[in-house]
Length: 379
Image (cartoon, rainbow, N blue to C red; front, side, top):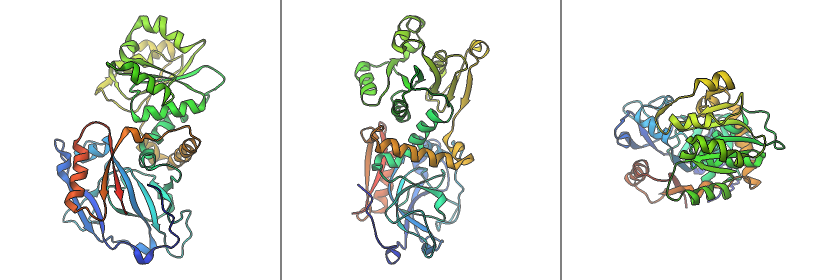
């Protein structure tokens, strides 16, 4: 699927009714049960708005956490969608195509541009959306649909983790970063971004029967310099005698990226050089981050949290920069599409009933395995 250039503003073809997946309440045990599909006429004047149609939206863990009511950031619920009680549109991420621009007003966008929202809590599980100003959106032209739909969270997270905290990366030195959860979407972007900058990456993954196969894929396809197992990550003898051979002479392990927590976080922190930094952006093990006192006293370890939502809220320009740089890396061939890591679910806009659309999304929420991406077929 690609963005189709449309020469007119399409004012005569603008939709009269929008279709959005909304929720008014939360349910921790069965979050999909709170969803409904609402057809409504938007209250805003379409001729004065940026009108976009949805191309695709992922179902992310944070989206599910919002439906459960446990995510720290929740959208405001309103009566804007002709509901009997305040409601919000589900979803934080997605890629859209501009189909109409405000009349008699200049814009940095063109009809046919692919865009994503800059801030979260915009509501993306919808067939159409409206935006008031250019500064609410950023262009992602040049990306394929899988990358464009997920760049706002995984792509920007990976870019900021690598670039925004360590400023003295030197490709001429033996600089390294270490990360756990090496098979995650963010981690795969991290290794590709690091490789493009000349940074070595050590990725830790869970022990498994096909470890060698997975490690080879991460190294050859996604650019990880070296992959080790969690058992090797913990093993004192391995870290003393074998790991130094992998790292080479005078390694500078400046950054540790933790999205697991528990024992794994302490093990990657131990690998940092003096005055190293560990950024925690997830907690898959649901165990606390426990760090040895000695790392703080004798090695000057700094441990900080990372949350892309808060970063963008405080500094929207940081996301715009991350997106622009990510698009450059992608178009230069330094980053590959995550399409093989994603299962697309097709929403046939013209043929699907409301019930079919809702069932499609609920199935995506309740199924396990790879990330699900709802792709809208407008043909």
